[in-house]
Length: 266
Image 1 (tube, one colour):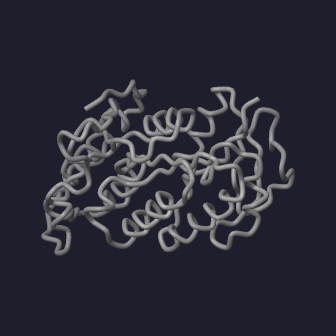
Image 2: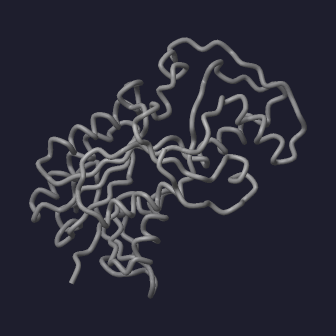
């Protein structure tokens, strides 16, 4: 009998898709929740995952949440306390029989280690130094994040964008599929990064969004922004020759609601 899999951040954009795929694979899934959901330590629906109460920020309830699990998928994220939350999770996991710890990070955290990216990089270090078997996947920005930002900017009569800001966003569903594969596999440390099929300037992402959503055309003006030299140099996407996994779903396909395809090695 296989052990349960605990997923942190299991109700977020990525986490809920990972939970769904793990259940489709026939695995028992336990989702960490900071708040009690009433039917605690049991499914909220006949086919739903089990919810376990635990607070990553304080560590409260984590020992019970990780009890008996064979794998932990750490999708939860906190812009201010990612390393602390991860350390609390590792300390609780270390009380068990060495569960496999799977972590999702961001491409470029080591080339642009500031703010949230620095927090993610520090969390990577906590996991690598934990003594537990681990796997870390770095992915680029999800299309949902780009769309949310584009939606806000589209309300402006003139849209300013950072000059030279280039990214390689990816479909979150394709990342969920890859992360599920890693979760069901053996621990393998840092794996090749994952990104979308195209490197795109943020200005082009905005223009495509305006067209795809039927918004009226308006000026998209590149604005010189200090402090993002590493981003202009390509910090936000995988470096050539690193064997990154590339998704097949493009930004226009995402906006049009076309389904994602399989992934390919790049």
